[in-house]
Amino acid sequence: MIQRRLIPSYIVLVIVSIFSVFPIYWMLTAATNNTADVARGKMFFGAEAMINFNKLLKGTNLWQSMGNSFKYALAQTVLCLLVCSLAGYGFELYHDKGKDLLFGILLLGMMIPGVATMIPLFRMMSSMKMLNTVWGFVLPAVSTPFMIMMFRQNSRNFPVDIMEAARIDGLSELGIFFRMFMPVMKATYAAAAVITFMNAWNSYLWPRVVMTDNKAQTMPILIANMANGYSVDYGMLMMGVLFSTFPTLIIFFVLQKQFAEGITGSVK
Amino acid sequence: MEKKRSLTIGQKQKIAGWLFLIIATVMIFVFSFWPMVSALTTSFKTGSAANMKWCSPLTFNYTRMVKDKIFKTSLSNTFLYLIIQVPIMLIVAIFLAQLLNNRDLKFKGLFRTCVFLPCSISLVSYSLIFKSLFATQGLINSLLMKAHLISENINWLGTTGTARFVIILGLLWRWTGYNMVFYLAGLQNIEYSVYEAAKIDGANGWKTFWYVTVPLLRPVIIMTFIMSINGTLQLFDESVNLTNGGPAGTTITMSHHIYNNAFGTGVANFGYASAMSFVVFVMVAILALINLKVGDTRD
Image 1 (cartoon, rainbow over the protein chains, first blue to last red):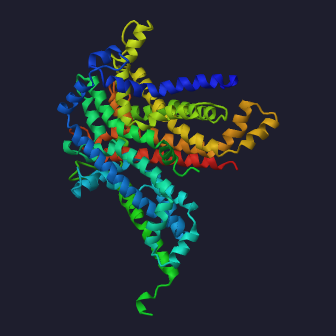
Image 2 (cartoon, rainbow over the protein chains, first blue to last red):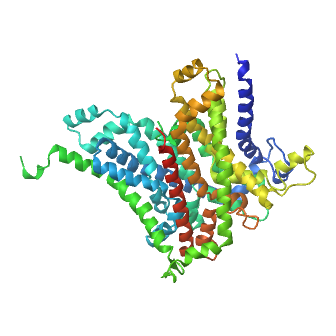
Image 3 (cartoon, helix red, strand yellow):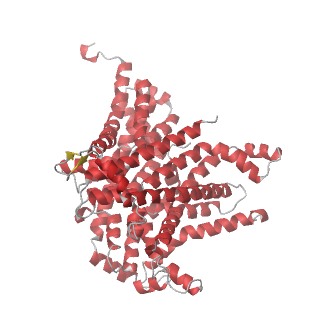
């Protein structure tokens, strides 16, 4: 039974929960209403979802942007996991003084704001003809101090005996990584994948800089552009927001534990 | 054996270790450290992207900032968000984590999921949701009208004070649950016996929280504080999509102003934008260092 002394806690938590969920609930209802109803303050589901969807299909290149977002986010996730887990593995399990020093230097990279590197990176990508390409999108985000640290911290639990045994069995150093380390570290990979995919899918500043062509645009850019007109169709806009949101919403509900682990990363 | 395999097993392993981390290291140097150096040199230059020249005097871009009204507004906006939003958010987050960490609480998972849910929404999406909610012809106004709290629609995003309020509210909505997750993880690491000991010593709930929980959570609190400062100094998506820096540039953030100078319509003022971005970098670095120092003083 609910304990009496906890009733104030429940009241606070219920209020905060409603505050947290309401904007998302409202976005879902607005996607099913026409813009007049949305403006009038209708808070319940309507019957205009298909109309809003068709308007969205006609007015924007929805599928192209969805495809782009998926392509870039998947590429970033695969490359980031591979590069950063290799590095985390190297830093932790082969560590010596030199590597520890290098690791400390790399951590300084966490202090570098994206807005400070965006101009040089734009010029770099532009001179390498990588604007509007998947490489232009992912390369600056593949290797991050945060991810390296996450893999490094988590590989502390990796049993070193396994490595010795594998060496005796004749496995190469890289073989140990692929055959032993990766399977054992599944949970860390899952958490890292969730967080990297979400970050890539949701990123906005860098894609806006590097994806100058409409054909290369991502979902966040698509919906941001929709809201820029003089008269905004709120039903259609919220349908766009819904498309931009549902992949991450699904990931959140299915993999909430991994998501939380990915966020807190190396805090143990 | 053959001469080729003259490397010992130990040497081989050492080389392998370096090879594992070489790609990541090179990439961080190429895509983070080198651009930072390049931003610094660019900040002393002027002219369009293709042919940039050194400024004369060299510090021209930096002295220009002092006279730039929008830059000053963006700076004061950033600090306004920093001083008001960050403390409220962190205190609420600790408080919620404390409530959720109670053993006897029912529906814990449900509450946690609800509070955490905003983290699954992109910054652009939630900015647009809040923009629609607070539109002059929007839900919030129509609710307030129905409740007879206001007699005519408030122009939330068209008035400086209320527009800043909406941004702060949005930031609180999006990030409180995020920080709460860190505190929950930290709280779960505190042994239950610590609390029992405090109880036996006669500490009440408030005292336990202040003298037991907060000191034990200090590393996590410092970390969330650094992350929040870092995030606030780099606010961009909200400024662009929620208020578009308006009305009349009064809610613009530093990143937004820098972006407008570098990639806005008709301008490519890379030198000046780089100078401003270097100022942001210095502020992030200084605040992070101060925080680390504060964290080191005790223990």
